[in-house]
Image (tube, rainbow, N blue to C red; front, side, top):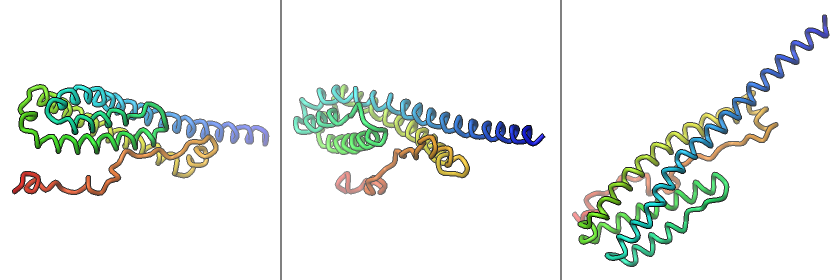
Length: 184
């Protein structure tokens, strides 16, 4: 009788551990899928930059060189955290360049540039949505990894906290001063 009770307890504990482990694996897979979705849009934006460079070259050589440096900044390898940092740098540089390009009236009138700018704006919106999705899956996984009792299973099997895709530059959180941007 005692052996049967011990056996039942061991089986129940094993099932609980398997359930927690499987939840951690599903969470990790969701995070990877969310980053992969975001990476599709990041790659699409990255592939668009050479067209933007070609269009800008005729009007603003210095800005085109800066855009080319942005192209080189994309890292294919590395950890998830390294990829996130590289993409944040690209986003900041691209946003900066687009603001500076507003100073070129001939470029702003170019239909190719206007179409690229429209497409880039759409892609940036898609990237923003996919970042929210990624951060939601990262939050869920981090909750699993850090809460009791799943944190015990997570540490036993090497599951760790996932980095968020967040704004680190405080200036990006500030409201835009539209009046000074237009010299008013």
